[in-house]
Length: 191
Image 1 (cartoon, rainbow, N blue to C red):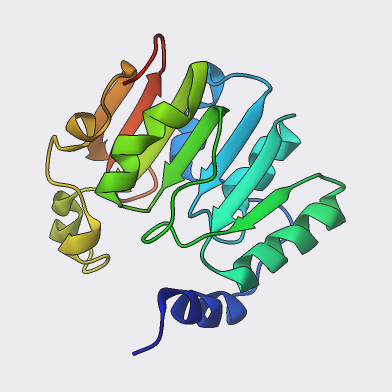
Image 2 (image 1 turned 90 degrees about the horizontal axis):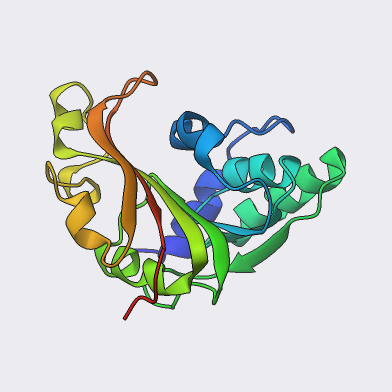
């Protein structure tokens, strides 16, 4: 059995990508409430659709992912668009997330409960956290991802200590999956 890096490198190596980013729906849904500049990081962001979209909006964007193939693709895409994009190859299952403070952290389609609990500490004061992760109800219509990669109904807010919830919803998103979507703000020191 290969490593996560090997598996994702193989998957991204077989994926044809457009240069124009197609950001996760949760980013588009909350776009009008996000800061307009600052340091942003897209965790487990694959080939960079979210991070590139943030860079286009004026953020100092960083993409963190386990796949060095995906990160190389994101770098190529960024250069073709004339964007600056920092990349960090990190296994978020074993290693800590890149240190902040971050003005915006994005996590889409990636469930790591212990990581989610630590993210508020990486935010700057007034920094925002955007999360979009499928819930177990998604299995009613889609066989994938399996339940081990999905949240239980109502679970997400309990995984994010110390933030002020700006919006939290769980429903069938317009992009066809049952997803928990969360937007929170750090308004005080997080212990």
